[in-house]
Each structure stands twice: as structure tokens, then as C-alpha cells.
Length: 507
Image (tube, rainbow, N blue to C red; front, side, top):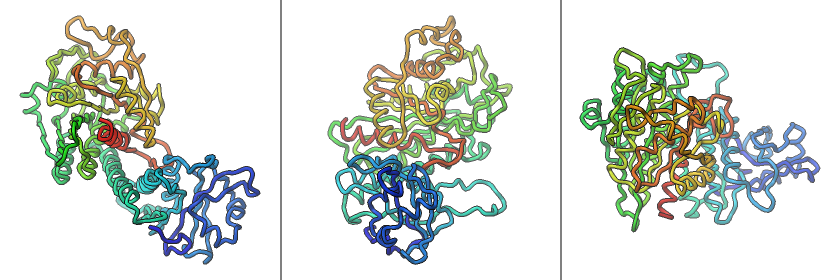
């Protein structure tokens, strides 16, 4: 909207503040809030300083306006130091919007008067603010039976103040941000759902129903179809559970494909709960393994966003869904499994189950035909050890790795390229099969790389591919920060959408 933020009939107005040493208050009110500053007769920065504001990124300071402006509250969110001659980066705005809207829980309507450039970068900045506001206010419905004392409801309505609300680029950016944020929210909801309520058949049914409603073509393979089709990896992992596995395929076909449009395949790991199987995990923290289906959730939600955004390239999603449980029927270390592409795998560790289901799904994607294959999964604890909880690891075809890195940086989902060394693959030679599931000689060393090396075996030479390990970034265990709330994060939905946009633009 293009109204004056000082005159908006809302419950709170959010403005941005920079830290700035050469100002008497140490603060600089960011652009977009000029009318609010004027209403305070130039004393707003000093008032914020007296309340302890420093302009540090993520800091929120609230002021009761007492009629100075129409809204009863002004909330100043820190943006850090002012960029020299430029507006803040979209990720700075995204995090600021998320932080501010979450801090204003309990308010009905909030207006964001944050600094938006009035040039070609304006739509991207607006989209970032809109995404941050939606994702920062996210709260999983949960399972509590009683109201929680003092718990305030998330902000119901968010308005973003812009110079010209009718400008076509801004309208398109807002529509795109809405579709993408909705997909991230859908991913978070699936990841946060209790695992007893999202076992493989239920997860597959929910995805299929959402896909059909969005207009996608949907194919679901149950345990009989998987066995008949030769999906040995998915069957092996899922056979220890009474809830049988599934493979879900979602297909988007553009009404008017771009000339020479490349085909894109997305593959996601959907282990709805991972005990480790016979190679059982330690009990501590095992409850977080409900998030082991985050890759499949992200792929499904990305296809829902694609159905709404309608890019000019065909996109197909493959969700390999199973529950990894120990039982008398579970697969064992020492088993040899025949995969969808005919390769035989010697199982050494049943807790390396993700690569088994993904191998089948990636081989199927290649068999169906694709030009680019992006696979994402909570594959290895080695990703967290190497890169932490915010940065994904990416392996695969060098050109595609770089595109993933650039796309991730553009949306605030950083990914870092990792190698696929020959010595790791050599250690996966098996005495009895084509390949071992892990490198026994390396044990846990280079564990993230072992996963990537294994998955490479299931991609045909004519397909460019990238494996995105999101073991850390897909699930946030700490306090809310920026637009991340506790639990599922929705990573890497925004990266996948950005990659599809990149394919549309650049082939």
C-alpha cells in the first residue's frame, strides 16, 4: 500500500533504524519512515536511544505513540550499520520483518514502513519484506489442549508501505512472495507434525491431495507397485515398519513451454521417522528424527508453488517416503539390495537409509528423462559438523553446484560447495556387490562426502545434478531468530524456486 505510515489505522507501525556513530543519538532512522519521524518533531531517534535502542540487527524497540501518529505503537527494528549509498540487502530486510512481526504478536494489523529502494531492486526488497513477515509470524498449531497463559496470537494482517502500490513489478513481486512463503509454511507444518500422524501412507496421501488440488499430475506407488517396479532401496528401508513405503511423483507441465525449455527434476528424502533401524541411533535427541522427511516436504511444497507461479519449464518432483524402524522384518547390515537402476548395494549400516531411498528416486528421475536434477535431503550428521546449522552442503556437477550456491545466497539460504573425492569412492568398493553403502574404512570421516559419492552412482552421465544436504538448516532447535521459528525452517524451498527461475531465464 502507498498510504502515509503516520496516518495508517493499524495496531503498530514498524520502522527501520541503523546504527550510526556520527549521529548524536548513535541512530539513523531508515528511509520509508519520514512522516513518522516528522510527527515526533525530530526526537524519535533520541527517544529510541533513551529506551536502549542501538540499531543492531534483530533488535526491536517499541514506543507508545500517545497519539503522535495514528497507530498506538511504533516498533523500531535494527538494521545494523547503514550501507554506504545503498539500501539494505534483501536478507537484512527479510530478517528484520520477521523479527518485528514476531515481536508484535497480539497485534491485529501491522504496517511495515521499511526502506525499499525505488529502482530495479525494489521488487526483490519488497518480496523479501513480505516473506520475512509471513515466516516470522509462523506458529505451528501444535497439540496443546489448554490455552497457554500469556501466549499472544500471531499478527493477523501485515501491510507493506511502498511508494506506488499499483506498480506492476511490485505487484508481481508480492504475488510471488505470497506463493513462496505459503510453500515454506506448508513445509514447516509437515516437518513439525508428530511422526505418529505422518507415517508414509498418510504423508503420501496429504501430498497427493494437495498436488491434485493445485492442478499437478500425481502418481503414487504403494508397496506392491514399488516391489514390482524394482525399487529395492525404498522397499528395503521401509520393510521394517508396519506403515509401508511410498514413492510420490508430482508433475507440472507448462501450458506454453519456453523455447528450448530444460526439464527440471526435484528429488526429496522422505523418511517420516528414522530410528536408525537395526543400527539404532542413540536415544538422546532421537525425537528430532521426525524432521528426516524435510527434503521431501520441501520438494512437494516447491511443486505447489510452481503450480501457482507457472514457470515456462516442466518440473517433476519425486518423494521417496519410508519409515526406518527396527523389527523382525527390517533390513540388516550385510544385506545386498538391488536398486531401481540394477546396481547392487551391500548394506553396512541401516542408519544410512536416506541414500538407499534416494538412489531409487534419482534413478527413476533419470529414467523418466530430465536435464537437471536437484536432490535435497537431511542426509548426514557430517553436514552439521562441517558447516553448522545454517549452511547446506552441495555436491554434484560443478556448473550446477555454482548455480545452487548463487541461488541460495540470493534468498538467504546459503550453501557451500563440497568435493566428491576419488579416495572416498574407492573405499566404497564391495567384495560382494557393485558398491557398499558407506566407506567402512573412513567410518564417520568425510561422512557428508560419502553420501554424495554414493548418490552419484544413480545419476546418468547426461544429467547435470546437485545434492543439497540440509541436515542442519532444515530444523531449528534454538530460540526464534529473524524469520526462523523453532522447528522446521522450510529450507530449501526458496532456493529450489530460485533455481527454477534461473533455469527459465538462463536455460
